[in-house]
Structures are given as C-alpha cells and as structure tokens.
Image (cartoon, rainbow, N blue to C red):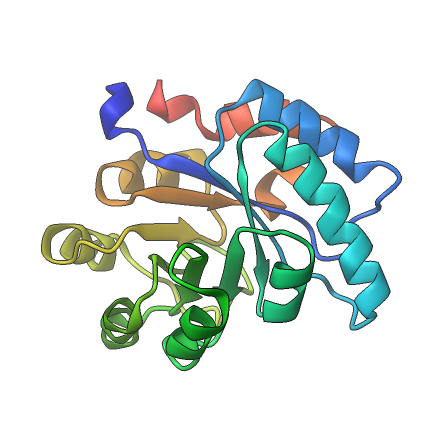
Amino acid sequence: MAAEDRPQIYLIAPPDLDLDSFPERLARVLDGVETACLRFGPATADADRIGRAADALRAVAHDRDVAVVVETHLQIAERHGLDGVHLTDGARNVRAARKALGPDAIVGAFCGTTRHDGMNAGEAGADYVAFGPVGASFLGTGAPAGRDLFAWWSEMIEVPVVAEGGLTPALVAELAPVTDFLGIGPEIWGADDPLAALRALLAPLG
C-alpha cells in the first residue's frame, strides 16, 4: 500500500498502565512505528494518579512529536499540557469541550456504530470520529462497526475516521482503504514485545 494511502496509527494506552514499566515500552513502540496520536483512558478516579500518568505519557510522546489525548477529562488535558480529549459519549459534549479547550485542541468522539451520531459530532466540531468495535471486543456495546460504515463515511464525510476495537491483520487489510486511523491498544500491550505485535498486525499494509 502506498504511503499516502496508509491509515495513520492511533495508539491506545491500557487503562491500568504501570508507570514503572509502561513509559519504556511505549517509547520503544513509538520509536519503531510512526504514530500520529496516543490516547489514554485511566481506570482510576484518583486525580493525582491520572495526573502522573498524563505527565509520564506526555513526556514520552511529545519527545517524539506524537499528540496525546485523554478520555473525557478536560481539566487533565488543560492542567497537564495534553493536546486534547477523546469523548466516549458521541456528540453530546463536543461543543462544550471545544469551548473549554479552544480551537487548537484535539476533540475526538467515539460514536459506536452510529452514523448519525458521528455526523452530529462532526458538525459540532469534532476533529475525528471513532467507530467500533470492528472485531471481537467489549468496546462500546460490542455490536460491530462494519466496513460499509467506514466506506460510506470516507466517501461522504470529510471528518477523519478512526477504526478501533478488535483489530486483526485481516481487518487491517480490509479497513485500510476506508479509514484514516487505526486505533490499536489491547491488540498489542498484552504481548511480551508490543512493537513486534504491532508490526505483525500492520503487516498487510506492506
């Protein structure tokens, strides 16, 4: 696949990341595969722990010119110098996030399998819309977002689209022509060598 046609890589950090080991694992992956954005959605409600995770991930990512967004936490994005937020409730809070963070921040929205919600998010000012899961995953409701949704979106809508949730090499090959970003996280972080796992997953791209 020609470089200009390849979807960009959008990494998703594990929610329960270990700050003693994960930054080093992340750095190795980012050094090995060109990545556009890193997202993290902390499993904890402890603001101090979330803040320390934000600082650690930002340091690794920004050193490599990779943007960082946090799920939902607008204040964390502002206080810790992140590039924006990823909203998990579709279009509902896109306008409020844009108003709070300003025109230069990244505001993304996960819209499950709902074309209408995606369109509303785009109209409200989202920089990207994510659909999923595309494979076996507990993301969202678990109902699959099929290739037809991405094909329609890519043809009709200018807002960039992310395919995420249960990606396999076969799905990478199937979705690459019709998505702007591949959202990859659980597929690689459980492996002993996440970089090797990522490269294997992306092998169909050439």
